[in-house]
Image (cartoon, rainbow, N blue to C red; front, side, top):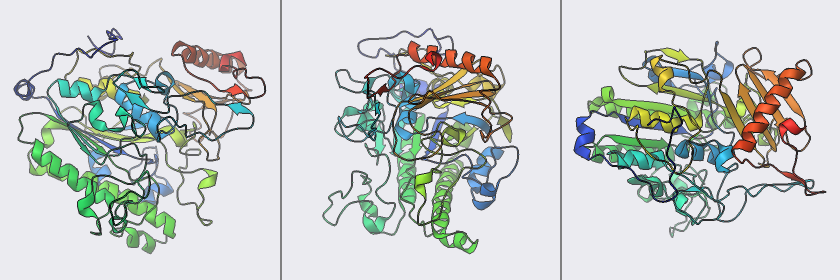
Amino acid sequence: MTVMNKKLRYLSLALATVPATAAQAQEAGRPNIILFMVDDMGWQDTSLPFWSERTPNNLKYETPNMEALAAEGMQFTQAYASSISSPSRCSLITGMNAARHRVTNWTLEKDKTTDLESDSILLPEWNYNGITQDAGIPHTFRATSFVQLLKDNGYHTIHCGKAHLGAIDTPGADPTHFGFDVNIAGHAGGGPATYLSERNFGYDADGRPTSLFAIPGLEKYWGSGIFATEALTREALAALDRAKGNGKPFFLYMAHYAVHIPIDRDVRYFGKYKAKGLGDKEAAYASLVEGMDKSLGDIMAWLDRNGLKDNTIIIFMSDNGGFATASLWRDGELFHQNAPLNCGKGSLYEGGIREPMIIRWPGVTAPGSKCNNYVIIEDFFPSILEMAEVTDYNTLSPIDGRSFVPLIKGTSDPSKGRMLVWNYPNIWGNSGPGINLNCAVRYGDWKLVYYYDTGKKELFNIKEDIGETRDLSSDNPRLTRRLSRKLGRYLRSVDAQRPSFRSTGEPCPWPDEK
């Protein structure tokens, strides 16, 4: 039974799988899998172009290990996520679109929403406690974790870095709840209090957190001068050292806090970018990017040293677009932008949802190849399970993702005739185009963005206008209506949420009702 044919069995009680033994998994020659997830990394935050030409950003940054990974693997030029962290990460773990699991904004404190309020709009009761595999927890979505399925089928599973799957004091705040054997520094926080060990990563001298975003579990690095990105990498490599001889294939979720704010300086690289003429904020941001890339290189080198390169898949991805919104200017200096894409994190324009994605699968990916078909974050669930040869499994809820393995192997095109959908009936707080109270659909070369509060619709041809500078809705009314119908029907079919008007209490119209 596979996800592709959508013939999954849904359970209302406990997950029922038949685990393989470690020996069986090893004998089957299953690949090790590393998912290298970067936080808030824009499509252009790299020296590796994901477009048809190099851009000024590609010339600004230095990411030689991303370049090396792509030279041996496949780049995905149209890989998508949600515009905000928690929705993406919950879709990754569950294989569901955010419209279905209803974790549509970022999570933090139990039973507290993170939305800003509006004078005119009432926001829906979304799942601000995140996701869980347990029943009976309010404002959460109960679903099966693909990591749990890997573990149940003989994989040793390691989490390192940012989790951001459940609110504080809920089961989903702890990555081990989702099937990770090892958790390094993962908790409810969606970013680091600081990357600086000189500040104990957000703890005071008595070991008390000074912020809800203090990074846990890195006490031995306090005061050492070691940047958080480097500390996490060292801990991940130590976990791999312990795992390599246990007879099981491993899955490492290397989920960096970088390159999320605060824009602390990684002193190993900051001076280099200042010498290039970048401002302080730009140079600090570039140092975060290169520190992340150095981590990727360290993990690749570990595989080489241990003779595991040929049997290890590496997947590189980001959870949402980079910062580029109007309210993120710092002291008159815009430290980040996503050109040629429009806007950034929090926006349903391309700058907020299009991500850098690379896969190296030795013996399968053609070196230096590119895939120009679109994929989305919920596709990782069935894809990773297929890579791990876990094909017969049960899930608590439907799976929206489609395996992108056929795109890698060139056997079929699961993106053909497919809609990609985003639903953001929330108010994030930052300003900029395409942010707050909207939903969108990508269908072929076309993309429709609809705003719940105003009823405004925008239509773009992404192939011809990647920057979304020309709204073609007035020129193409029939196509606008067609995509509105597709989007509205999909949202209703997954029981998606929408905001309401404060003045009347009536829900805002669906896109096909306006």
